[in-house]
Length: 421
Image (cartoon, rainbow, N blue to C red; front, top):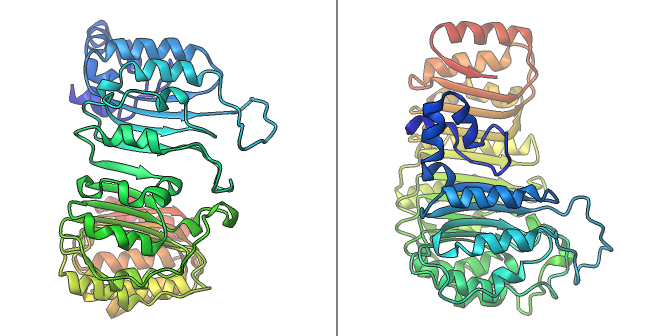
C-alpha cells in the first residue's frame, strides 16, 4: 500500500494521466484489484473544471470508489474558451461548475480539507449549504476569484461561506482572502487556528496575532505586493504602531512583503521557530536591515533549521543575504534555499573564512538562480564541502552550465555527493 500511495501523491481527475490510480492497475490483475478496492487511493483528488463534461462522470466514479473515507479535494475553475464581456459584477461562470459543485456538496459531510479556486465568483450552491454541513472539515483554502485588479467593492459576499466553514468542530487551518478579513477581522476564530495564510495590512496582522496562540504556521502576504492599487480597500485611519507579540507554538513563518519586514521582526518573539521564508519585492527601493532578523533569532532563542530567501534587486540582495547567513544564530540551519540571483560576488564571500564558518550544519543547499564566471560555482561548492562536513546535496536550477563546472560536479558525484543540475 505504501508503494501505491507514494506513486500517486496528488491524484488528478483526468482519465489516463500519470496520476490516475488506474494506471497502477495496468501493471497486473492483482494490482488492478487492489486499486479498485482501496478507497484511500480515491479519497484525495484534483478537479480541473473546464468545458469537458466527462469530468462529471469521472467525479462520480471517484466519489463512489472513495467509499466513506474523508475527502481531500482541490478544485480549480477555468473559464478558458468561454465568451465574456469583461463585466466584473455579472461575470460568466463555467457551465460545468454547478454540476461539479452539486456532486461535491452532496458529500460535504466527508470533506476533510478543501482547496477551491473560482475564476470570478463563488458558486451559489456552496453558499446555500445548511450551517451544519461540515462534520470533519479541518482545512480550507478559498479563492473567490483569480483576478487581482478587480475593484475591492462589489465582489461576491464571503461571509456566509466562511460561517459554514467555521461551524465545523474540527476547523483549524485556513487561507483567507483580503476582502473577507478586512470586513470580518474580529469575527474569525483565530484562537482555533494552527495554520493561516492571510493577506492583510501589517498593523491588522499584529492586531490579531495575540489571539493566535495555537498558531504553528503563518503565511503572510502584504496586499501591496500582489494586488493592483485600485483593488485595495481605502484606509480611513493611518496604520497603528505595532506592539510586541509572542507566539509560543509558531514553527513556520513565511512573509511576502513590498517593503522591509524590519518592524515585524522587531516586535515578534518566536521561541519554536524552525523555518523561515522571506520574499521582498523591489528591495532596491527600500533596503531591509539584516540586524532586525538576527535580533529576532537572538531574542527568540530558537533553533532555525530551514531558511529560504528571495528578493528582487541584486547586488543589494546579495549583500543582505550574506549578512544574514553570517549571523551566528543561523548556525543551526540544515536546509538553505537561495532564490536571490547570485553572482561571483556571493561566491567569493562563501569562500572566505566567514563564509566557510557560516552554516556549519548545512546539509542541503538549493541555488535557484546564479550567473558566474566559468569554474566559480563548482569552486564555491568544493569550498563548502570542505567547510561544511554535513553538506551532501546541492541543487543548481538556473545557471550558466559551464563545461568546467560540469566536470567538477561529475567528480563530486563520484565521491557520493548528490548534485542536481
